Image 1 (cartoon, helix red, strand yellow):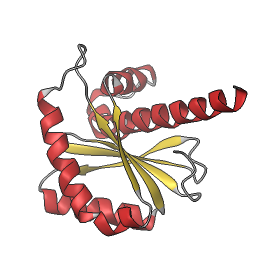
Image 2 (image 1 turned 120 degrees about the vertical axis):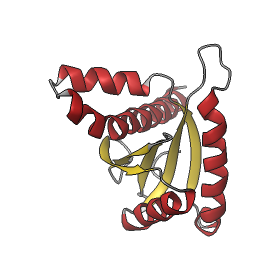
Image 3 (image 1 turned 90 degrees about the vertical axis):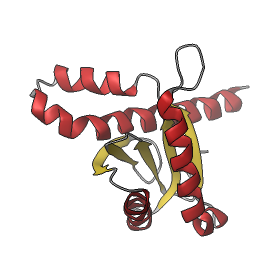
Image 4 (image 1 turned 180 degrees about the vertical axis):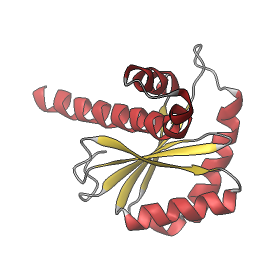
Length: 157
């Protein structure tokens, strides 16, 4: 559901060590890398995410969920589901006021991000710093494009 009250969308690429974040513009058309946060503790992570959500006027949160090639859950899927439950609980009030949390298949986002950084001739040590937020950007942009295409398809029917 793009254009949630002209608020930005936040993309999340959850990792056991780092969590990549990306933002969209106010029209939820274009995604761009924001930063990564260290995944030290659930409490600290949720606090940082809540801060971003408030400061950036977020109306939609898209969390990447890696689905295996055969459509089955992966090992990290279980960790992400736990993270989502903690996040939902801490954002309960905001969700009540219209914040949308959704999960999106992020099967190839890290590979796409890695390829993109290599094509840009980013050195290996710098790629480590950027890959999570870039992967998050691929997740968010893919979600936004899919939503836009669904809307355009409905309009043309």
